[in-house]
Structure formats: structure tokens, C-alpha cells
Image (cartoon, rainbow, N blue to C red; front, side, top):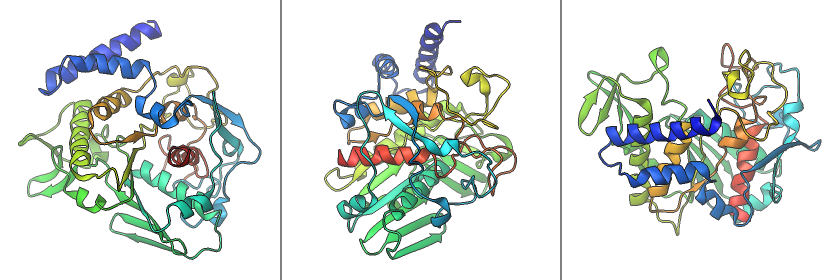
Length: 370
């Protein structure tokens, strides 16, 4: 089946299940989905002006990585691939090169000066943790002698660069919407974000969710789903994702003042468990030492990306998409695999540090300062 036909079938199927399962979905959304899936993110383009930072290629750069992991105390064992025995290091040496321009070089001192006295919060799952630890390490490499406090408490982590008054926080919440313990079990509440009170008053918010929406069985952290006042044993997870994101979008519309808070969405981080995604059906991320260098990634656009674009197209407040999906799909070599301090087996969903999340933060830096 041709790639174009499969892509059209995929979009049509997405439209059908959203139309049939969600009363708020209208026919014109299909055109929005088609336009979004056939083009780059309009939000990303507006950020990048005449340069699309999210379309490019990976190039070898001997000056990489951007920091020494042995000198950064913020990296958890699950991401510290060199510490846990990864024998190769070429994955550390790739720089993202947009086709039509170059990303500005990250300058941690400039970042701290510009955001002096500000509070930055990552909100999401362990992929947010990945990016949070990357950013704090990237900044620390520029001010190794700066006074820093590092606090971990009840799902909230903070790194404070005291000489600049810059506070970088991580709020762990895998679904953005609430996950509550009720008398009859654990309930994922698609219509509720009580946890959002902790996000208010920040100067920058970087959101992320997707990683946990597909989990089933013993790795599923809920027993029921609550939707529209009804408690369900389960439902189509892509529809649940759409509804949860829509609740998040309403929270942003009601609670964010764009003159005081910049809002970003991390994008959909891909996995590399199935080699068929890059035309090597017997492989996974294990043993991969080079990126995928083809022009177009064979697996195509993830459905979750299309759903995210749909929700972002409706949001009233400015939310800037860090469109990391395609550039991250190429990096089948950048996962911890077996070289992790906390995961057994192979981890093809998180990313080694230093590594790919450093590029996500370079894109964040470019969006803030270019």
C-alpha cells in the first residue's frame, strides 16, 4: 500500500473516530486535520519566522556534547547512558541542522540574565523530566561555580540558580488531567485539572503528555476513566487523549495571561521499539549507533501528533509547539536501551543525557531569543 494512500486513509480514520465518538467534533475539523498533517505546524512556523527550525538533518559535530554528564548532578540514572556502560559515543556527536538556517548557539549565561528572577516549570511525565534535566545541565555548564539548590519533594523537583534568582521546576503529572484515588479504585478524570493550581503564576510553562496514554495491564496506573460524569472501565485511548488535551486547552484559556506567561508544548516524543518503523523489521533501538538518514521517516506522522495539532489549532491563548517529533524519529540511536540505572530490559522511549533533549532545549532557546 503506497505511503500517500496510507496517509490519506489514516487521516480519514482519525476524522471518523473523532466524529463518531465526540459530539463537539465538526466536519470542518477534517479540513484542519488534513491541512495540519500536510504542512508544518503553523505555530512552529510563526515562531521560526522565515526559518523552519524543525525540518533539517543530523550532522556530525566534534564539539558536542554541550556538557559533561559527570559534572552535572541533576541526571537520573535512567538517562545516564555513559555511566551505565554504553560502549559507543557517536550518538553524543550529532547536531541538528535546519535546512534553511542555523539554530542559535545555546548560551546558558545569556539565558539566566534574560530570565533573572523568573520561574520556569516543566509539566508532564518522564519525557518532561528528560528535558528538564537536560536544560538544567546545559545551563549549569555555563556557570559551574554558581550557587545552586536542588530539591526533590512529592512529585515536584526544583533547581534554583541562586545568583540569578532563576527557578526551574518539574511538576510530574503523566496525563495533565487528574488521576485520583476513589473508594472504588484509581480514576483518570478526563474533565478535571485540579492539579493545575500548582502551575499558576509561572513565567514559562512547558507542557507534555502522551507517553502514558497507551499503557495497559500492569503498567496502567488507573482502573477507571471518568468522562462527562460517567465512569467507564476503559475507552479508545486516542479519543481519551483528545478529550484530556481539550480539558488542558480549556485550562490554558482560563488561567494563562499571555502578557505574563509564555506557554510551550513539548510535542510528541517517538519511540523506537519496532524496527519496521525505519524499514528494519527485526531491529529495535538496541545496538543502534547512527540516526536514520533518509529524507522521509518510513513510519510517517504519529496519530497523536495529528490530535495534538487539532487541539492546538482551537486554543485561544498562544501556545508554541516545539515540533520535535520528526527530528526525534530520526534518532533511533539516542535511547538508553539496556544502559540505564533504573530500567530493566531495553528502554526505547526515553533518551540518553547528554543527547536528543539538548536539541529540544536549543529549539526552546531559539524560540525565546531569536
